[in-house]
Image 1 (tube, rainbow, N blue to C red):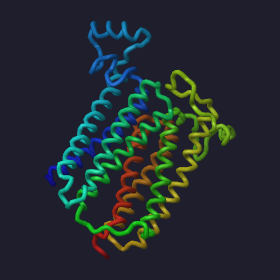
Image 2: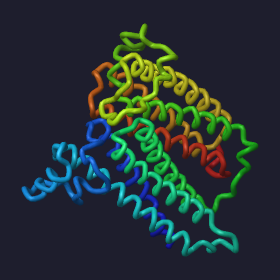
Image 3: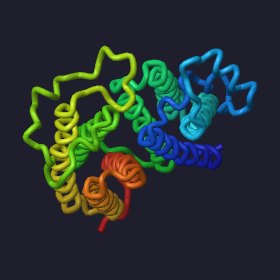
Image 4: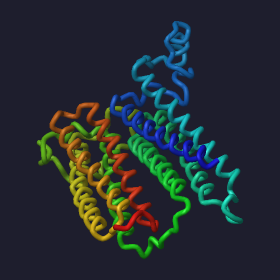
Length: 337
């Protein structure tokens, strides 16, 4: 069971990264409403293209126009997300079967798997609300954060599976661990702000480097203007100055995040004389530099879709690198220098 289980967890991690990437591509290509219903597409399991199918669409969705490209982008995302949900169900069943494999107490693996199952069910509900509420930004951002959380928890499960025999230290007394957790929280806020930028279609409203071209429009007060009370939120409903302020806040916190992660990485690198931990620190810094470069290029090149997609993927990889570093700092492992 052990080898097969590890392979299943690894496959789930890779699939989760694909789902997060497809979700980002769906948002960036404006395909979120490619299928106006859920879980099918205009009442079908695939995108309708036959004449009799289009007749049904015209009857049931009289004001809709089928856009095959956008619809397929959305449906492919749903197919992969459904497969991921199925794999998480299988992980939960296996964990339940071997729940007492390490003694009389319930295995932490089972608790972890049940948490993942609950989260993926809620993520499915968010996916439905994203469509039925016509891309309401709070729901869209929640859906994005849910996908990142599922990916992070699957990677954490993979780490626990591969390091199941390691003696655990007491993280609440470990200064390096607390520093890493602090940096992780700062990074999560930055990811949430990035999700808020995407959900409100605010990226193009802050052009120019290092500050926005129309920075005089920035105001804290405008950030309190929330996207509510609309029937459709596609392409954004907030005024220009609010979207500019949202984007610029994301840039400000990016500086805070970069400074925090570099400082914490430097402290941990020289405090923890451990090869694996130092390697994890280097990986965090590498992903952070790549993310900063991508962010600058995206603005300079006027927000090309492919680079923006890589920016989303790099955010996920940076999050996973930080999760791995936090995990390693709770374990007495690695080869001492």
